[in-house]
Amino acid sequence: GPAVFVSEYAVTQGSGKGNLIAAVAEAAFLTGMIRNSDIVPLASYAPLFVNVNNRAWNPDAIQFNSSIAAGTPSYYVQVLFGRFSGDTVYSTTVSSGNLAAITQFDTATGHLFLSVVNFGNSDETALISFDKKFNQLADVWTLTSGSPLDENTLDNPSFVFPVTLSLIH
Image (cartoon, rainbow, N blue to C red; front, side):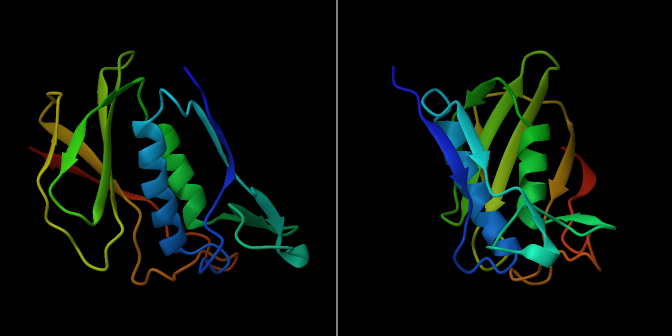
């Protein structure tokens, strides 16, 4: 069947120099591409790098100067979705309209990955179901901040940064 390469996607409106709300929107978009990975086998985020002393547009995934580099929240979305991906996609049902979710299984490692994106304005409680059993131990990675407009800067490169905690089911 047909195949689509989604080239150079990024949220460019209301994204500041690379804020959390843009990253959340891109993450929700990624769940849709993964859900349709039989048709969309390739995608690339762009633009990737910007020298902060010669910025031509916003956003860029990684900003740098001659001394330091900092990933934007969008960069960390790419890191998380790249690190926690599988070769099998399972149907995923979410009971909340403000959540996007996708479940993947890596047959080589036996790891199951559930990616959930909250694009609403508040915390969500939801029932999420998928067609795969999993172990009782799970790690949860979150990318969040106090405001959807928060950005990383060269002075504070980890202001919006993934954090993890372990859950026991």
